[in-house]
Length: 372
Ligand SMILES: Cc1cc2nc3c(=O)[nH]c(=O)nc-3n(C[C@H](O)[C@H](O)[C@H](O)COP(=O)(O)OP(=O)(O)OC[C@H]3O[C@@H](n4cnc5c(N)ncnc54)[C@H](O)[C@@H]3O)c2cc1C
Image (tube, rainbow, N blue to C red; front, side, top):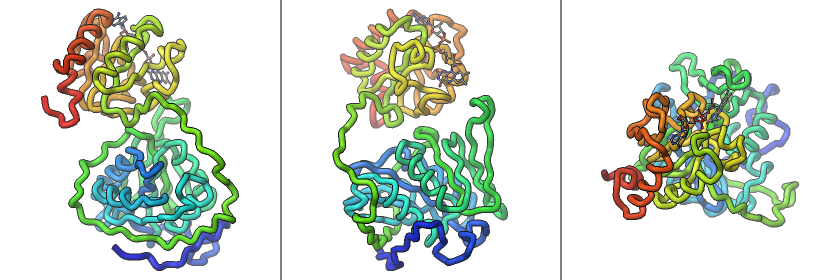
């Protein structure tokens, strides 16, 4: 572990650390490495950060000698830095300071800008979460380069171009656009949770933690955190291990109570297709798909969901898909590992009984250790 003795910079006007007039972002040379900004709250990292570190590793494999760096900001978050190495970072830049205890745009973007200017990563990746979107936007206004927001695919061209291929739905989600940032560095993108797969963490993986000498002055931070009120969120789809999802085939909101029982018995949460949300049967935070969330649980149980492409795109990364539909032609049955043709109101109660008894294929598929 080394201490980073570089001065804490942060001219808030967008001037570069090396003093060039244009911000030097117009040049593409001397920028190297992929930086992932790790998101944590109360010392709990968001899974999307590890998914991005995993994707950064896959992209770095196409760029010889390209290090994967992670930036961890917060207070008393050294354990998160260690996790970042286990998940694939070569170098972790650790900014640990009381002023970073709770996310606020100004100190977090000051530190991120400092790191971008001093470490000059060619690519910067941030999770497309509420805070990630806020941070990325704040940085993009101060670094003279582009930001591709809400990507659903990220790849990189090998040298000499080393271009980030940042893809996202465009034109009312009717087509996928791949956006390039050819003349400026860093190339910045945010990506949705659940789009990429995290690597299996390896606590013995070697890596370096560099502590940044943070000298943030609290009196110069405009925003004060007066009180934090935790939202009692009932669903965390992007982090769920098991999702039991319902669609129009439920026939009404009552169906979600049944699915809730199955989800509870399997230790999971409830998801939904767009028509079920639009009908007001369940809240939008449960929606999965192109205009909802992207998920990749161990087990996805689809009940009364036909399997339109806009739904499949949000859940096809699930490890095991079980689908129940009374129409044998429903496309979801083709996409499923286990296809059950039948009335969900007959099938689901039987599955609940099995799950409550701790037996059956769903219980096996939902197991943490993957034992069948
Ligand atoms: C730009 C755009 C974005 C979109 N984004 C999304 C999105 O994010 N998420 C999303 O889900 N959709 C999205 N859609 C909508 C998508 O195209 C489909 O219309 C939608 O996914 C269909 O929902 P569903 O499967 O619940 O309903 P349906 O297609 O109506 O399917 C219902 C299924 O339930 C079955 N069924 C009926 N009764 C029973 C029963 N008792 N037991 C068992 N099976 C039964 C039927 O056989 C049928 O297969 C989007 C569309 C567009 C144009």
